[in-house]
Length: 251
Image 1 (cartoon, rainbow, N blue to C red):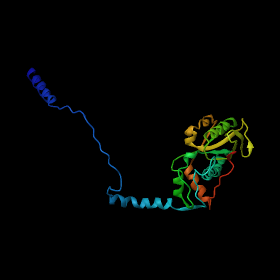
Image 2 (image 1 turned 180 degrees about the vertical axis):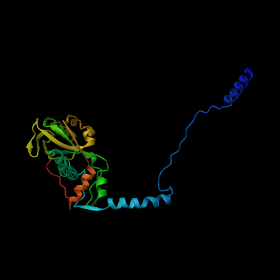
Image 3 (image 1 turned 90 degrees about the horizontal axis):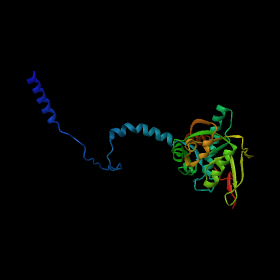
Image 4 (image 1 turned 90 degrees about the vertical axis):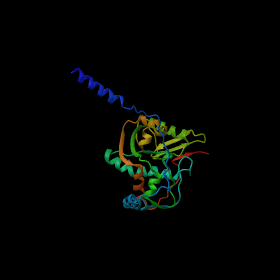
């Protein structure tokens, strides 16, 4: 038995002594640019083509007409394209919100930075909506007391940017001090609950809009801003948004 034990020990010692230790000492990589120099895989292209053609056909379908070219840089505290977006949210989302709650949206607030493209003069397509709003942001409606609406207004005063609004009217003096603010042309009551539509990015504190933390309740509409625009465009034969007096400053 001792002889066999010795043989076994010798065998396993030999096996393990022959095992090489492997350890990683270096990692190398190289940059491979994806550009036109890469050859196309014909088989893959033929497979994708019907799907691509179908998507492009839908995206390029004409759904409205823009009477002029509109940019978010054309305007100080409100812009034509920003007003269009805010008004579109109010028009398209209020029926949805009302059907679920019996209430109406009082104010819409979006962000200037969320407008990612101009609205060019001429035919408006589904692709246009994707260019203006490429993000997946959806509409939420928050419940804010009038005193918190005043924090919202204070934010807009300090921001000095044309963040799109609807339902709310603000007038500032030449030094950006508040002269007047109304909702639906009525004074803002501190203890009244107002229903404010915004997007989920801003509701979560995006662009430092921390006043939404004071929301008493939140209603998720499951309605993407992009789809709001598409629905709004389809209902509008011609788009002619204007810069108006919803947010102004005295000179």
